[in-house]
Length: 200
Image (cartoon, rainbow, N blue to C red; front, side):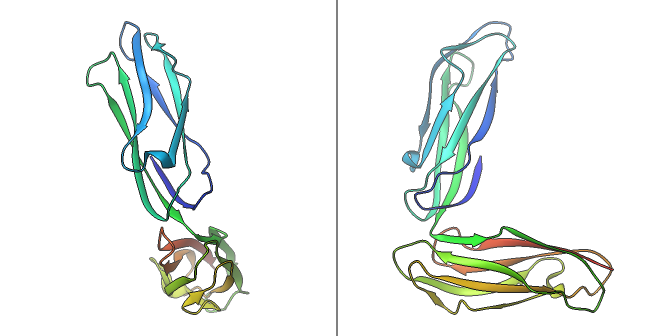
């Protein structure tokens, strides 16, 4: 179960997994908990109780609240009366102090060889120390169809915000896609913004 980049101290939207008893008898649930190196960064609630009837299901909902930047890992451990107990579900996410918004830009239709109006991406340092930015670039299948300029430089102070302006210049007709990548030391790097547009 992958949670992606979550700002340090913020809580993700819940992710849900279904536990199904495929046996013909009741499954006893002894415990459901979080284990692993960064178990304190994840929390779970569930509807399973102490047993799940034959052919029945219950839900386990997990949230991620990173306590530090970088990759954080743990697992949901389900101890039950079935074979192969405990069953485990791997959990991973990245704590970051970098907020990049929006997560995607759609330029719509643009005539081949012409340049679109610029669209804005905001990069904010949510941390208490200076963020070091090692590069901002465009990658992907149609990376040459997009250009970016930015005001970020190599260092963004605590609480600071900088801007990336992206333009779409389609070289061919049809759907064109790429990504802006922000490379930094804020955790979860690179932060990625998806780009799309249609050449006409």
